[in-house]
Length: 317
Length: 282
Image 1 (cartoon, chains in turn cyan, purple):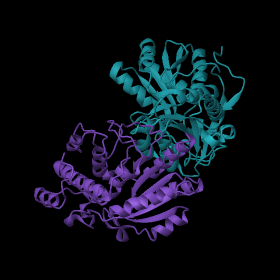
Image 2: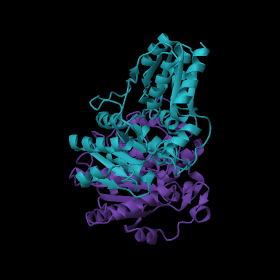
Image 3: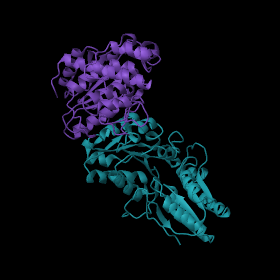
Image 4: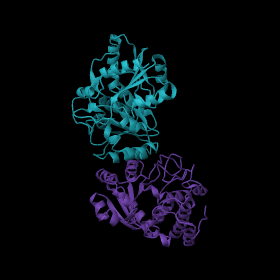
């Protein structure tokens, strides 16, 4: 029996746009900057509601990030919006010096992360951003799983004082998280309890993990599904608690296997409680053009891949 | 702020130059050339032009703000801050040493009063300053924002992104200065990467440009006073500050060779012989 269902599909970027509008209503210090992608980032409603607090920077991501850092001096809470690739790898040094090292209260919001960006292809499909951003001291890294969680995360980071990278995506995906769930940074959510294997998933892969749990259940395997929306700071306690029960794990993410959530979990396990861990992620490759569904399948990011990884992990116990 | 005379400002500049060469010599590390070249500018700013409060607050509401984009001028920045009361001048002796607040390039990490953002990786300060300008406007704060960049730093593309933004959005509460010493690390700018007609370039980008004789204290003060009168008119302001690297120490003047080299003991004695001790060495 399905433990999670959905009645509609929505894009996580719309969760960001709606969350930003609400954050803007709650706090007049919230400001937004966008590098010529207002429609793609769903920042239009904020711009319409608060034109004096919206700053169009043109296709100048380095300047946008630098200005956002400067805007914090005097108490503003800047949210920058562009594609995930352009707010991480393109401006890594600006983020490092002007924001992370300088402790600036900037929210770097990146849409169209991962292969589910689709047809535009590998130039835009960043799969290294979680790794880059989590390595920066002071930086919080969040990858919510659906519309509701992205909206809640957007509101939560507005109230958090410090640099944050918020990663979300382009396609419409199932909305399955409750819409009244407050978002607690760094607190993993145990979505389905189980005893045989722990599946730690982030972003779009959380829904795939839920589908995988159903398939595993049909095979008589009890999987625990944990939504790791915050990759940094990582909820090590929740991870260790789960594997102490299940004895093995799977990490699932729309990101390179190297440097992402899987490696963060491996770090915790190695230091505390070594158990088998299998990775579901992109294996040292760039993406390509295609539909999100085709790409998830081709790059090994679907529920089937999580099932296979779970079976392998259990076998290694 | 106090109404310092040009002579008083020049005396302070002499002491700041002594601080710079002593700091760089003590750790055998740092960048004396451009720091010496910009001493008049920094002293004029902090002792005459800026409305600022040495009881430092990060937000700087109601104060003028200064950003150092070319962070390798840290020695002149630290000396100026200490001499204007942000922290004890004794702390200048810790410059570039382990466990110091006076990092090689300015940083906020250690909480040194007067530093609002890290700099050193070039090209970022103009963007930082523009952001601070936007917040000043949102807060209805009429104070001004100043930033200093190097001319070699203008090689960085981000500067020109910021130049476009400032003009397009009529950011008219900024006074940006370029230290136009015509030198960069690998040699004269004309050999490394020509900047062409800088005045025409910034004007073409939509900025009001003024030119300043950067090692003449009187000229620096007058120019900055004039720049202030040009704010609030719908256009950002760019001050082309013509300086000589190493100014004040004869064997360091006008060459890129002292960009990042410390004087030895004999050179320190020679340099200090040329710079009057006016406020007492730290």
